[in-house]
Length: 207
Image (cartoon, rainbow, N blue to C red; front, top):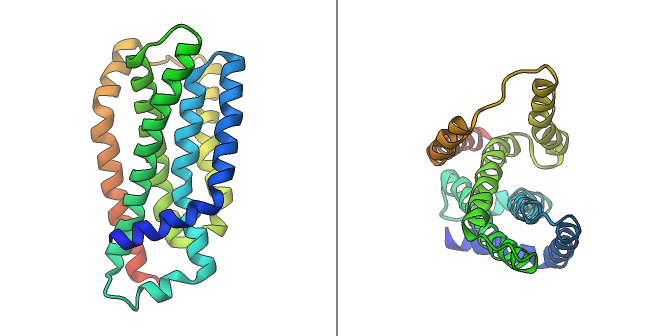
């Protein structure tokens, strides 16, 4: 299991420069807009999506055929992708807290609790998106996933826009607080269901 995760992490050496460039770009954007929350969101989302990129490397190298010749079960291969996703998401969240704190110091408005809260919300959103996408990529592959990824990102935004324009009531502060308290359990439940679904899909998949 450890070897599977390390294999994926080593693959990111070629994309490290691109990721640093993205980080610098969004840092300048956040400074210009004086909005450190934007940097946190983009940092966590971009890093988390690297988990999906690992599928692209595997498909090009026909990795699955080789992996299944080793003493690994299909469920372990699936689990390694979920662990990779979690590692990337949590590591980027720590980086987001540090980056937001540094920016807030620059703006003379340091608020560690706010940085933690923003990063936690971004982390949960990123994980939910990943948990939705992972069973799909196991089913159809990463190349066919691109249009679906766009839909997964834009449909919620369009839905919120329509709700606001229709004058539908928005959640009040207490409802948002309750939702925030329940969100870790919701994310874990979505992740568990997603993992079971991915295992079922991958067991039946012809390699």
